[in-house]
Image (cartoon, rainbow over all chains, first blue to last red; front, side, top):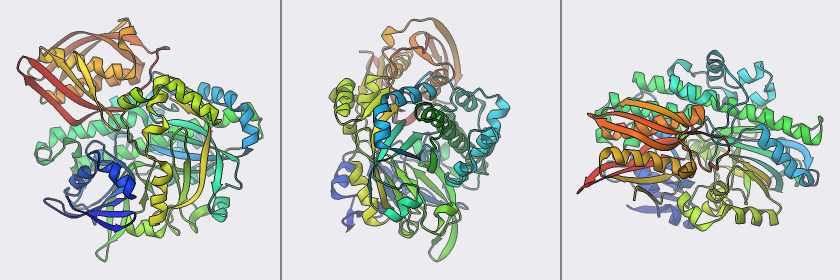
Amino acid sequence: MEIKKISDYEWEVQKEGAMKVPVRIYASEKILKKMQEDQCIKQGMNVATLPGIQKRVIMLSDSHQGYGFAVGTVAAFDTENGIISPGGIGFDINCGVRVLTTSLKKEDVEPKIKELLEIMFRNVPPGVGEQSKFKLSKEELDEVLKKGVDWAIENGYATEEDKRHCEEYGGLEQADASKVSDTAKKRGKSQLGTLGAGNHFLEVQSVNKIFNKEIAKKFGINEEGQVVLMIHTGSRGLGHQTCSDYLRRIERESPEIINKLPDKDLAYAPADSKTAKDYFGAMCAAANFAWVNRQLITYQVRNSFQEVFGKEVELKLLYDVCHNIAKIEEYEINGKNKKLYIHRKGATRAFGPGKKEVPETYRDLGQPIIIPGTMGTASYVLIGTNEAMQETFSSTAHGAGRVMSRTQANKTFRGEKIKQDLEKNNIFIKATSWKGIAEESPGVYKDIDEVVKVSDKVGIGKIVCRLTPLGVVKG
Amino acid sequence: MKYKYISHTADAKLQAFGKTLEEAFSNSALAMFNIMTDTSKLKPRIKHKISIKSENQEALLYDFLEKLVFFIDTEGFLLAKVNKLKIKDNKLEAEVSGEKFTNQDVHSYIKAVTYNDMFIRKEKEKYIVQVVLDI
């Protein structure tokens, strides 16, 4: 493969063989080297061979090997003669992250952080086998799938402002609950309002550095030391099963498609097929479920803060972003406006100023982007740009991106030691398992500062502020 | 050796072995649950019967493991043992036992089974199955 350097942070894999478009990689030299150690660039080249792919495959600075599509990939396909691919979105449909701002300061929270973590841990069921505190009937679950955050408003779990500050206003109207299988619904029913394990977390953070005061202020970030709360989770078993159901359906219905693919996980449905339509409806429904999931957790987190700091504490939703999803968006391709299925798998939408999809509060600035880091390091809030709209189908990185396997992490790190080390830096952890801590320790991820720097330097997301952890609840 | 884990950046890759295809399938289930918890500490308190028909062997392995993930999500089931498992003409009949999640040390969670790098091979007198799980 030939990788051409475009700038210090942009590289391009030239078209070769069956590739219909090139692969554009956003990375520093250091990150590019890491990417070359696994299969992720090869996976990007596979995506470039799929029908109806537009302009270029995008691999962001947090890319790492996935199944079929690498994590950190953006791929745009024609909605008329292109495709939609469940694997290009990922099993955890609408996995995403939100930030809530508070009026509390670091000094207010630090003395009570352990108590706060205990209470959040109790109120938000974190890990495996933990059952939802919200008991829903089958009909109610269908309402959740249809309405998203609107359902949460109707039931007193969300405010109108919460809705306004969610990507897609917390609900995709193309959702079709009847296209989500009963198996998926059964998996999801007992999991609404639960965090899940792995890399999902609740994190109490403080603003460590503000890079753009004016924008930060608009986002409700007023000063360094201000406390915020981050939630990272997705659609739980309901989303995973939906992805799997459609991968299997494509496999059964269209062996001729599967047999031609270099990797079965690239399975796709032609855009004009019934399967594509059904999958898109189901995916939107699963996305709505994920928004409600994050909203119910928000509700429990608000209660937890009030329990510790009193009724007057207010947690305002800054924004909620999805980083595993496909959307229909319009872009100019060869001078013509085209509707495209934008697949973002481990990528965050990064709309610049002026788009109606961005809430009025932020519209003249651009969309807030939230990029979570790891337990011991930092997370970032950025803002979307016009450059992202032109260069990356309005997308930027989504997280740190793993560099070490869980097996290796367990050999290298001990959960107890990681916890002690973090406590020395005043970062407290409440988790279900020591091994779980070891598997998610900061050393298994790329350097988040470096990942975010790439987006900022290229201009596909400008840094607004840096957040550092005070305490983490992990599933 | 019943199974082993192979390094994979983001997910969990495993190989399971057996003298028969049935044994290799059973060991892949054990390997999957050992990612979550130490299965040797679990007791066979509850039973599940599984009956699946798929279009080929790989699909059968996928569907079998996914069925077990379904039990995890819907009732917190943790597998201790595969009591019986029969495969004939891409049809699988099995009985598994384990216990409900209460306060076991569960440190990881299986999101999904994938086809990534999956294979089922017979080498001399041994069957090997390989699966990558999304976790």
